View 1: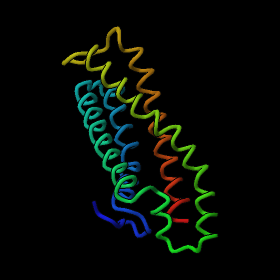
View 2: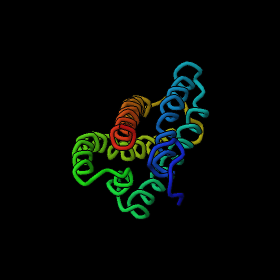
View 3: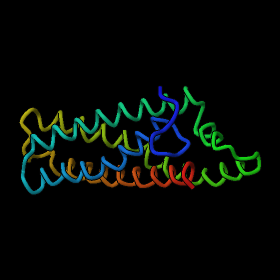
View 4: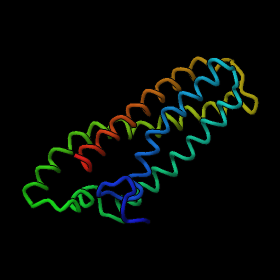
Amino acid sequence: MLRTGFLGYPTTFMLDFVVCALVLVVPLLLYSLWLVKVRRQYRAHKRLQIILGVILLAAVTAFEVDVQYVHGGWENIVARQGLDEAALAAKLAAVWPWLKIRLVFAIATPFLWVATIVLALRRFGTDPRPGRHSRLHSVLGWASTVDITLTSVTGLAFYYVAFVQ
């Protein structure tokens, strides 16, 4: 894995990559919703959701491997900022509440997305059209949309507090 970030802050390549992905995922998700709600392009919506799901799963997996196994945790990445011991302890203490809020949404995201996508694939079949599953799919889809949006917002806030500020 690459050891340094590309956004100009003392991070890692994967941290910066995931931050960029967080910025892109919400507009792509909104585009997918526009495809299905306005254009009634169910197949295009299905394809885009599957692509987003696979890309996010791969990105999050690579991110976790990089942060946890390559760098030994986000705290070690923050420690590279060259702060003295007291300042580092204060920074880590200030970042923890942001991380806890972020984790509430980030942990729920894969469960919501997997449930939404797997149920849709099973119940809508190869030619997706409105049907009996539409109501539940809409509820799960909106829950997933709100959750990934909050995951993105809290992820960006965590990045800012931990690595920019």
